[in-house]
Image 1 (spheres, rainbow, N blue to C red):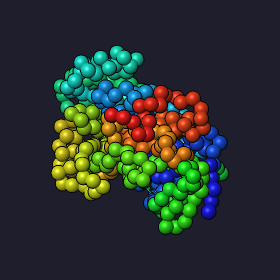
Image 2: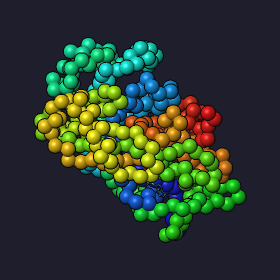
Image 3: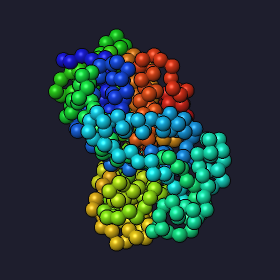
Image 4: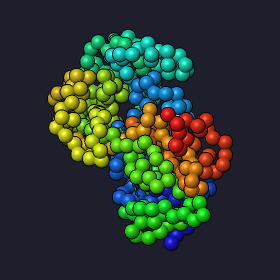
Length: 365
Ligand SMILES: Cc1cc2nc3c(=O)[nH]c(=O)nc-3n(C[C@H](O)[C@H](O)[C@H](O)COP(=O)(O)OP(=O)(O)OC[C@H]3O[C@@H](n4cnc5c(N)ncnc54)[C@H](O)[C@@H]3O)c2cc1C
């Protein structure tokens, strides 16, 4: 039986980011993952570093985004320097085109430091590259934002934890029960044994609801998303492009990720022919040159969906010492540094970096 200050259950981006930040605050952390780290949504995700259509979310999402955004450059550089795995953070800019609710977008932007720059169709064309479809207005440009390669971010965080003396990373350990004594957390157990700590963080993505079922009812459920990889061999697109709810993400090697579906399929992460056809058609509509490009991969992942996509971050009332960082929906990569900061403040008892009430566990509404 090994003892640490905090146990984190779940080795997705949010469990690993929680451990990464807690360790920097001086805590000894044990992270338990039932499979391999970052193989679920935290491998499947596109890695766009802004909530998609940010004006369509409630303000608590914008507050987390504002806390996370300035951290990405340093975070990626630091992980690359310490682990040798470069997550390829690329601030190539994000373009929303043919926006149906342009008035809403403009009103939101006026309240959020003019984050969106309205552009003419021809200027949007220049920035995206001449291969994209025509008639892009209304278009909104977000300069300085971009994407990260999610699987590489996961590998880098995992390696950082493997190397750190205050981290214990255990894969292939499934947590089946929380251990408590006199209303306090004592640790967790699974078929292979027990781990002890006075604090436990549940960061099990869409499985968090089951992990907590005996302690609190959290409305977190899986939302399947499928993706395609187009193996383009020359630069066809200069920035992330969003149109009609779908998106294209150019990578540094010129390959283009296209996504995504939002499906209620329970915990089934199989891909489907319908998903393929839908994404393929939308991608060609955005970038007709993709017609000539081979699709080499098609995959699916399960987003941890929650009401209004607002994650649950904080302490569960009973038992004492039980915390949650889960339910990030389609924004679990971009918001991860911010929710980990908020979690750290709860655990360390330091002032929260954002007003914590909207993320409380559970919350009303
Ligand atoms: C197709 C797709 C595209 C996306 N695009 C983006 C994007 O562009 N930008 C963005 O910000 N987000 C995006 N997302 C969302 C993002 O990927 C997720 O919100 C995020 O990865 C969730 O991370 P997590 O750590 O909370 O959960 P997960 O990645 O699901 O990790 C949870 C982990 O907990 C483990 N676990 C569960 N139960 C137990 C147990 N009992 N014991 C031990 N371990 C357990 C699981 O094995 C898993 O590894 C996308 C998601 C998908 C599916």
